[in-house]
Image (cartoon, rainbow, N blue to C red; front, side, top):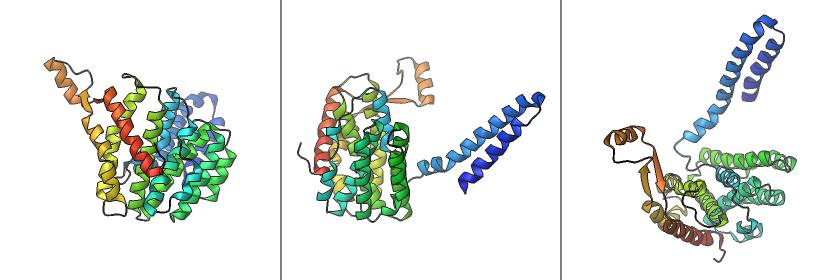
Length: 303
C-alpha cells in the first residue's frame, strides 16, 4: 500500500499539468517538481531510518564493489568462494559466516556483470538461508527477479543489495542478532579480501587505497556490534579471531584534511572536523596478510 500512496498522487499531478492552460503551465510544472522531490524523499525515508538504526553494523557489499568497478579494478572470479564449498559448512557459526561470504560474492559478481556466477551464487545463498532457518527472507519472487534481470547490471546490483538489506531486517526483527553479527562479519571480511586481492599493488594516493583505509570506521562499527552480542553463539570466538585485523586498523593515523602550522587555519579545521585516514604500504600489506589468514579460516580454503 505504501507504493500506491506514493505513486498515485504523482500520477494525478502529472495529468493535472498536462491539462493546464499554457499561461499556468510553467508555474505548475515548478510546483509539481517540488511535489515530486518531496515524494521521492518520502519514499527514501524508510531506508534512511533503517540505515540509521543502532543495530545496523555495516553497509551492503555492493557499495564497495560498485566503487572498485568504477575505479578500474579488474574482476577476478577465482577469488570468490566456490559454491560447491557450501556443503562443507555444517557448524551453525560457520554457516552464518559463510552466508555473509557468499552474499558478498553475489554482490561482487553482479557488480561485474558475471551473469552465470550471479545466478549460481544467489541459489547458494538461498539454499543456505533455508539451512539457517531464515529462508523467509529469500523469496521465490526475488529469485524470479534475478532471472528476469540477468542482462541488466544495475538491476542485478540493486537485487544483490536488497538481498542484504532483507537479511538484516529479517534477522533483527526476529531477534537473531548473533547470526546477523556473524553474517555481517563474513560479508565484510570477504568484501575486503576481494578488493585487496583484486588490486594491482599499492598506490598511496589512489581512491581505492583510501577507501580501504576508511574501512577503519566501518570495522569499528562492526567490532562494537560484535562486542554487543558476544554472548551469542560463535561471536566471542569471532572477536578473538579479528584481533589482528583490529590491530592494523588501530595503527592507522587520522589527520585533519589540509593540516597546517597556521593557528588560524587549524582553528577552521577543528571546527570542520573533517579527517582523512592514512595508510602506508606496510600497513596495507599487513592488513592484506591478516585478512587473508582469517578469510581462509572462515572458508576452510588453504592460503
